[in-house]
Length: 622
Image (cartoon, rainbow, N blue to C red; front, side, top):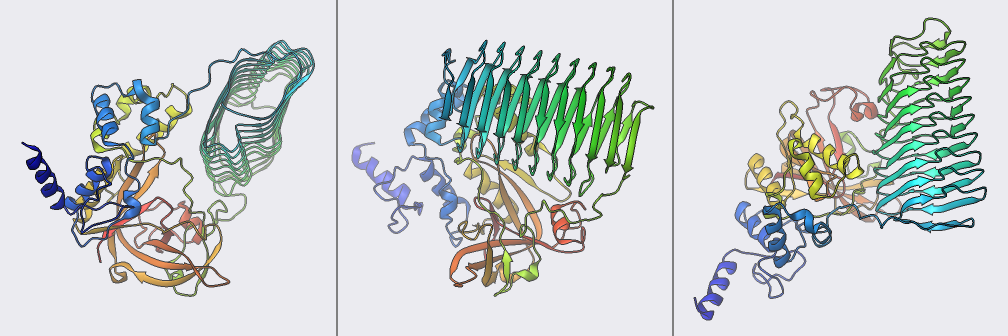
């Protein structure tokens, strides 16, 4: 083919495809000279034009999620993926494709500080030895990894074998989006001194903190967490070995997990074989939503220790707690729950081996608000001052953890209605779709989880490994009754799923922006999609994953609305919202947040909610 024939071929092919580009000038539906026809964006636009009817509106916000890879990079990374070698260029791949990948830690720092050090702002460090064998003095971190999108930090040895040395973290990983913080050994075999975390993971999204060995074999050293994971969202916190074989070491958590959402905490080996320990949890998991807490070997084999929970899971919603072995085979230990689990809605609680073999000590619950399973607990010396069996201590069915405005009735969608808007802002890291040519070459199943971890540089038990595993597990979950579902990592896959359910005549919608979020708004003009009749929809919600991944599912029997959102004082338009109302809720759980917020139960009311930022609903075109 000569040059003239080649030019004619490209002109004919692309002009006949009715191609246009989001954010670029359109010339009679053709590609402008500034666009490369071999980019993922150009490929997707051709796919859209071939798969969806011409009269369907063009979704610029959807096209903005397309991979930014150049034609050359797309070809290069596709080749690497097909040869299972993508991990060899992971850093380049993450950067070019705008993915969510954990940054590599800095090289191990062997720096030593002879004098007291006070760091005002600090992040992204991998300390091999920090404060080890220090005599007296004090080190402090005022703001450590605060306000970052992704924070990955590691302390391999912190204050080990120190004497009379004080450590202080004023703000550690607060206001962080996704973080992975690790202390391999903290204050092991130290004598005297103190360690203080004033704010740890406060207001963090996806916090993941690990203390592998915390204050083990310490002698008379005090540790305190003033605020731990307060108002955090999701994530997991673990203490593998806490104050084991310690001697006279007081530990205090003033606030642990208060106001947090779906945070998992684990203490494995807490105060085990400790001597004269004095540990206090002033508030543990209070006001939490679906907390999952696990204590294995708590105070086992200890001598003369005092453990106290003043408020445990107070006013929390559902969740699951487990004490596998509590104060077992101990000597003269005092264990006390002042207030346990006076929750809004009952969760699951399991005590196995409570106070067994506790010689000369006592265990007590002053107020117990759950209906648990007690297996193999001591028959003597356990005191329940008040016990609420199988009822909510508050007597209420309304869950205060359901954000105001998150769910509402269809009658609210009338012009002039004043209502609360929930937080519709997207909290997830910014990512983009991958081209189908790359996604199709990447494994995506629990049976191949090790290979997926290898591709994205996720070490076993790391935060990234947990994020990947969680997303895949949800995608592999069996569909609910009547549900059709699919997880998609490319725009082409999403188009295929939507059209397979709804046909080629579809339109995709989302709320225009985030103005009015967490504020009161006034409903302006309202338009019912398809005349306000009951219709079908495909809803797509983001899942946290290295590349942009959506969980899409069919939603039968809904009504969809578009409405202007107005500022209450000026009545000026600030947003254009999309709301979906589920007409049939008969298959929903009685504990669904919608019923807790609105009252009623499955099948008795319709439930409406807004389409949040970067989520979307596909419907049959009007």
